[in-house]
Length: 505
Image (cartoon, rainbow, N blue to C red; front, side, top):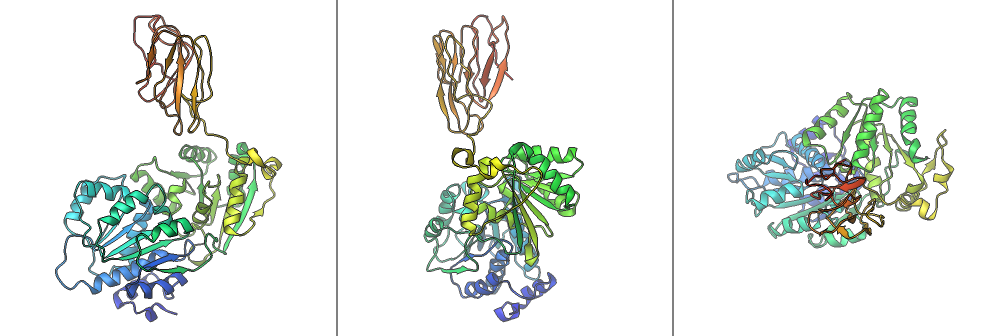
């Protein structure tokens, strides 16, 4: 079947031919006719199979056919995407497929100034692509009206309706006209999320192109059992020995992405990092360097798993396995795009063993095990507690500390609470270390302060809650001696002196 048989108008057909597209993918072949018939659709297909074009083409065509009168300023189509990168990618698709149509589109997302976006909206747009956070900002400032939206699209609907987005999506949807067409697209859609999506859809047609969470067949998958401390060396060996030229590496934490980039740079391998702590300018520059080949490796967190559409990515390496097995599908789907072959390697330490079991369960296949010089039997055979991640520990208050006589040392992880005992006082400043710790630190002396984490009187070792700075010092002018964890707005004072001071690392 060719695109001409789908009743697509000539301007869009010309744009498709310009891109070299002649035959629709299975998701496009099944969904485009339904969308042109005004049906609500849930489309589920593997990453890299053309989901974006499956909704961009019919939205462009329907808006073009309905553009008879003068153009209004309010958007008539709204596309929500979970990440800035995916929003930018969708915007590029509207550019490409709508190049011969007189329709205006705009992508709005955080990380860049809001004023240029407001000005663009004031000039009027037909199609708005947005991330939920920035769209809520514009709505709260009354800079946008959504009452004229005729098409509502959720791309990566499973992520959008996850707990982090569901409230924003509901509020945005409540601002739309009831008479609208709803389109949901995703690579994965579990039953709970599917049930929730029914709140937004009217008698939808569900299109399943492949079994849920089944990776693209053309991707060669392999798992390497390795200890955590050997992962860097294994990554270097694989890149060098196989002469990899365009590699996407996924890590579990933002700080780790920067560390892996530094490690690769010292080994002479050009690399860039992309994660949530990077500004939009830094993220765009990293992607451009990777696309152009100036960077051989792109190290990313899962924020990029659903927003990267780069040609010729030969290898995806899971430096850390994802803690949500569905994300594995999105990660490895960055390779083997448009029918090409690709390779996905996964590093599995002992603490990742349960994640691997979950991935194999939802993908319904056993991933091949690789032999290599860093092979770890303890990682391969890990069971029980050894097969689970250790609690994350921060660098400051709240954790496992208990002491007496004025010494209270504690370390914090995620969602831990602790109380340490000391002389005559308690310093219970609020703290967060690493995750969402709340700690009660200890200080010897005769005061108690539960607000901003102040302690007075006496030379002490204690915690003053917060973002995990530590202090070491001994001074006659009131510096606390020993190890004190401090963060946020907590300050520690010692009372063997006349002065106020802060304990710092």
